[in-house]
Length: 129
Image (cartoon, rainbow, N blue to C red; front, side, top):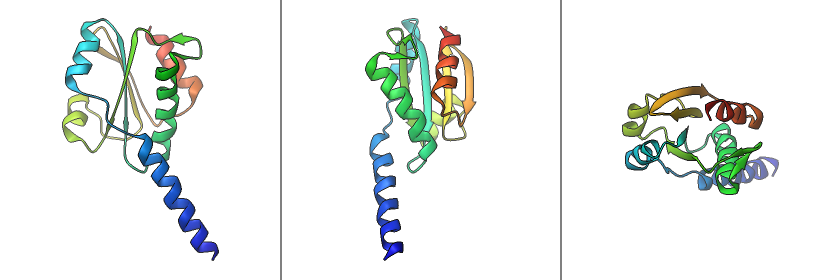
């Protein structure tokens, strides 16, 4: 019985994480944001990755609320993509899930893998604006 409840919990936890993730990145939107002079934040994920979900939760909340630790998101665009999408992964030279990239003035200025803490993510974004 205990194994059954653990199994049900795992199924529920994984399905919740999977539902929150969707690819919002497109080359056209990425190029448009850069041509408008915006700072572009991109994160990669994979279906059942809990650290990806943590990173995306912080960034989606910041995008939806318009701020992260005092950083106004008016001039920041946030995109995410499934790292198994090889076309996007190759374009951005991303090999791992939970990769966080920041672009400014058409150049990559920040890259990290596995960063999921709100303070360090906001520090990286603050340093780019």
